[in-house]
Length: 438
Image (cartoon, rainbow, N blue to C red; front, top):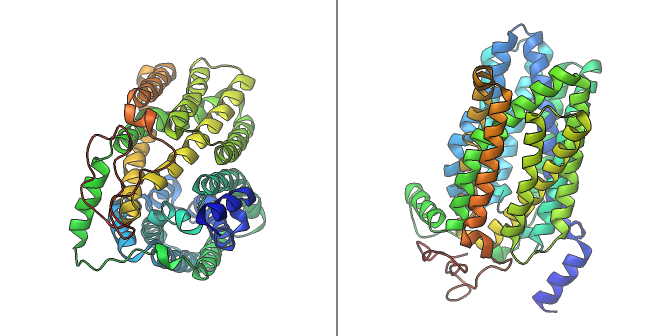
């Protein structure tokens, strides 16, 4: 049976027909559910211990710095030893950290220092885990787009439902128990990943003795050599600062102030539903120019900003926010699957690390400055700036020929099966920085 025939049959059945993908899907969804419940439990725990709003801020911010700081070096390590060992180690570290914290909360000995340190460990674990998220899917299924769509849909559903479940659980259980459930989710995830078998033909062997720093430089050169890649990531960095960050804060504040917290909860639920739909749609469509379609979908995030700036009625706000979630999920599926198809496997973890760091680095800044800036110039002006930035950013991406013309299928490999980088895609503005084994 040819590889083409096998791949076609797998696409008809879907990624969930593959045992390896089912294990990864279950592991990822369960650990995400634990993570989504954790902020609610930590907030209640910190307040219950008497550390106030300052303590809540410190504890919730503690994982972010090590996560971002370690991403680039974790990408290098994942390219050297493979993503699976990194993910197993990360799950073990997070299981131990959250397990210790859960025990301390249940015993009544959770100091603020312990709370912060355990969340720093959690951030370190996430930093080790995250690069593999961007590279392991092609190792276990040929239909990466459908697989990523299913993962995005599950992620959106979990992000919507798990915090509500955490709220219900906290009415019945101690916060330490809920934190313990998060620890247990990492144990289950690690157990599932432990039995994941990646095809040996796809494993990456590194025997050239290069140092981590030189590997990091190679990753940067490969990243810089692909205009479609860095254009999108730079644009999303600006979106985090001027679009997504402010919208998250101002939508919560505006809808809650004018329509109440229950209405805001309904809108968030509809947003989650839109994200699920977008993930499923993204898994089904097969555009010839995936990034062109993805950017067009991203334009759907603009109406929600304008509706909020106009303080529109709730049906309009809810409808546009749901539509925006659909567009962003379709974008996410098409972007991730394109990245995984067009980037050589030898550097995929490093490129994904640059992607994550570049895309989210300014997001916390955008959230932090949105409130003070709105207090000075008004919510409407901040939101109009966000809408203008989104429109200009999407238009700039469409104006980039490499983004418009990048095909679904990756460019052919240069050289033999063992190891050269992919040839530049149509419209690419330069040769890859170095020949690397995929």
